[in-house]
Each structure stands twice: as C-alpha cells, then as structure tokens.
Amino acid sequence: MKRISLLKESPKPILLLFHSVLVLEHNISSQILPASSILHRLCFVGARQGHFPDCLALINYKCNTPTSSLVFLGALSLVYLCTTNIYSLIEYASFVESMFILFSIAGLLYMRWKRPEMERPIKVNILVPIAFLLICGFLVFLPFYVRPLEVGMGILITASGIPAYFLFVYWKNKPMIVQKMLRKLTYGTQILFFSVQED
Image (cartoon, rainbow, N blue to C red):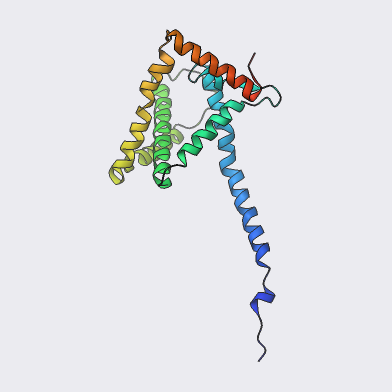
C-alpha cells in the first residue's frame, strides 16, 4: 500500500498564513477602522464647540485632517492598553455605550409623546424605537445583576466627566495663568502638526 504524505498534497503553510492575515485585515478594516475614523472627528468638533482645548480644534493645512485629535486619541488608546484585563475595559465601554443609547432612544420616545406635531426628518413606525429601547434596556439593566462591579466602575468613569465639564467647559473666567498655558499649548500644537484653526 502506497503512503501519501499530507504535507506534499496540502498547500504550503506560508500560503495559509498569508490567507489568514488577509482575512484578519479585512475584518479589522471593515469593523474597527470606520469607528476610529469617526472618533477623531468627534473630538475635533467637540474642541470647536469648546468641550476640549483649542489645540484639538486644529486642521493640518497640507492634509486637511485634524492631526492633533488623531494623536490625542492615539495616545489615549495607548493608555487604555496599559490595563491587564482587556475584557473589563470592553465591558465598561459596552455598558456605557448601551446606557447612552438607551438615554437617546428614551429621549426620542419622550419627544414623540410630548411633542407629536414636531417635524421629523425620518419617520419610522413607533414599534421600532420601542423594540430598540427594550433591547438596550436589557443590555443596561442585566449587567447590574450579573456584574455589579464592572457596572459601578463604568458609571464612575462616566461620572468623572461631570467635574471635568465644570472645570474645563462651564468655568469661563479661568485664571490668566491657565489661559496663558492653554494658548502656549495651542501654539506649540500648531507648530508641531503644521495645523491652523478652521475659518
């Protein structure tokens, strides 16, 4: 009986590795990259509205991209990677995202109830937002029972934005030394990233 070697008959391992890398790259580019291409623009718009320092509201004059926002979010992502338990970070983020979606849909339904005559650019059946509210409610309230520590940490992280808002956004008459430091930071960012403020 003749023995057949599977190694000679099968594709080379390097081809399998190359195929695996291509599949992984496709998954990353189709799911993660669109979200990351939006986040830096949200940071840029927030800085334009005064919710972040002015140094994040700058546009690179060669590429027309908010380079300082990209670098800021990249550095923030590196800080997130310093955690030893990435699953906890994913749970915090998914809980907070579901909670804010729940608030948004609840606000939409409240406005549909209190002001039904208001013009709506998109009209859908009322059952769609109600079903979405129930699903988001499930995603928000079930973790209170299953993982109360992670939910508490997610709420604490979110609530830490309240004093930051009052300190950096709401407080308009900052001391002159703080205003001077922020101007120097904006000037340094303009030089470093070849950026200017939007017209």
